[in-house]
Image 1 (spheres, rainbow, N blue to C red):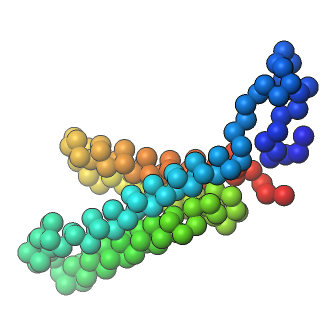
Image 2: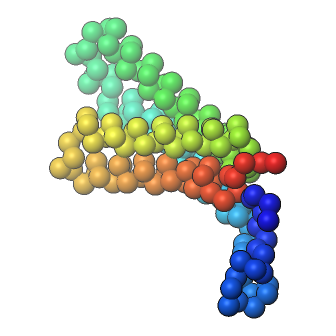
Image 3: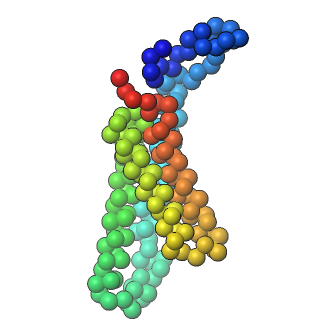
Length: 162
């Protein structure tokens, strides 16, 4: 049997009737992976909106006034660039969901997005008060988003392409 093949050989299934093993068709697996990546894209887009709302939500004009102008600028520039990166993640997820699970470059991008969200979950635990329910919800959401990219990037269709 070829590596990465979705067909089973009857000799591998001792005690089973030939053809009785149900293996998902490659298109079904790819469709599930695409859907996971697209859901990840929606979450990334919602985080873009969330980050762009920080100025109003946290009353940054007033609350950042106590910072030096350099620190105020760094915080706002990093927030804008975080929103940009999340927008790129969303765009890639909507435009190339199949490629993220089936090509080497796509799998690398999927792993990078997953790593971003895992690191974000770790940073939540390190820098925020974990006694708050909201912190745990955010950690769970970050890890769930990472899984949406890990599964397609590491799943069965992520076998080396021939």
